[in-house]
Image 1 (tube, one colour):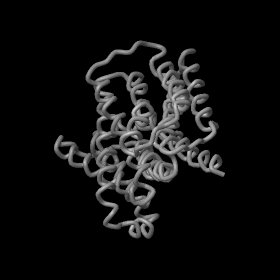
Image 2 (cartoon, one colour):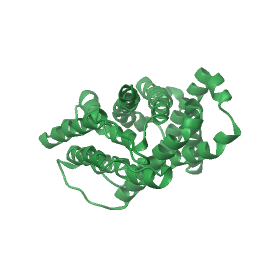
Image 3 (cartoon, helix red, strand yellow):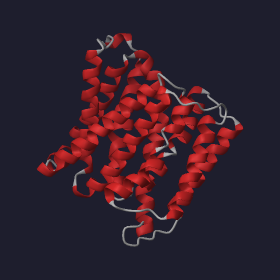
Amino acid sequence: MKQRSSLFYGSLILIQNILLGIGNPIAKYGLSSFPFFLYVSVRFLMGSLFLVLIFHKRISGGMRASFWKPGTLIAALTAGAYILGTLTFKYTTATSAGFLFALPVIFTPFLMRFVSKVKIDKKKYIPILVVVTGTYLLCCGSGGFTFGPGEAMAVASSFLVACVFEFSSLYLKHMEPLLLAAYQAGLTGAVCLVLGIANNEAMPAFTDVPAAAWGALLYLGIGCTGISYCLQNFALSRLDSTKAALIMCSQPVFTAAASFLLLDERMAGLQLAGAVIIMAGIIYANVMPEHRTGGTI
């Protein structure tokens, strides 16, 4: 039963990454019609509003005093991770960033050791190494890899994502996942709104924006923000952060597939091999037998 439960919650992270993988090339199109920070603000505030309208009873029922301190910590880490991760693309290539965005899978075992006081079984490092190798081939196999300011931002963003996963896994056992999802989206949207105003951004007139760009914004707001954070939080209420981060490495695979279908971007042989290796590592991690001894998983 435990094995089936683990597979089910792991599948929620996988579905989340299918949504995000499709959303990445869609965002590339949508962002061409809007100022950056206000576009992101509308996306996240739309996701938060969507959750509040649909699940207002559960969200209001979860508003206890014990929620706000850990909830604000997780939401602030979410905002920082997203903003840093997006700024990364101004200073480095998408391929290098894609590889570095997989690094939460490296950080989470150490965060589990110091935050949750849990040590993972050494055997679980095997799929981690397999997935990191596959991610490097997928994202950097057709070129090279250098380290500069953009790469540093990507690493910082990945560390914050790992923190989001670890603290979510720790605290979601005692809080409402839907409330946290709405709070994460709402706080990120509010921060981006302030940044947009500070940068003198202005939204274009409704009629000046193509209908497809509004459609892209709608998909990103509801699918890649509201629904995505719900899936993530329900999964992290039962999964450890390392397994969730490992499955999260599937996102570049789905991004590559969506980019091929929507933008006609093609992968080289090494990149295809990397995609296969990533999925093999994730499948292996999810069929490994679970053993828990004391503070080890």
